[in-house]
Image (tube, helix red, strand yellow):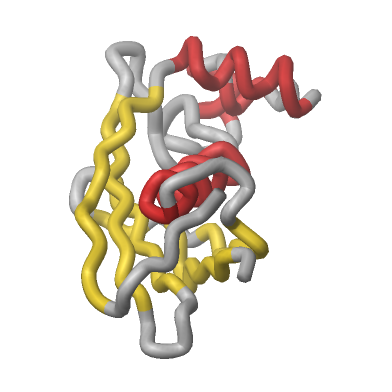
Length: 128
């Protein structure tokens, strides 16, 4: 069950993404693209290293919104543009998610890694 959220800034939360998370996400999603697990393959296609699945990053944003709303199943919709890859070194990487509740009740979500936005125009709405 969700809790109504008042307009204004929401407290940020940091998630650590590890390569083990990427393996688990690949198993759950069926997305076994080697750029998410193999350093050599990722570099061979011009990436700086292994990258997180874009949908995994978006799922962390949805999880954040659910937590802010006080419960599971509270997100009616969420969408974003994938603007930068999240490079996941062997030791893992932190992404920070924050939000602002707009007057219309939608939530503008920001997701950053090393201070760089990785999702653009990320917006969520809650179930009524």
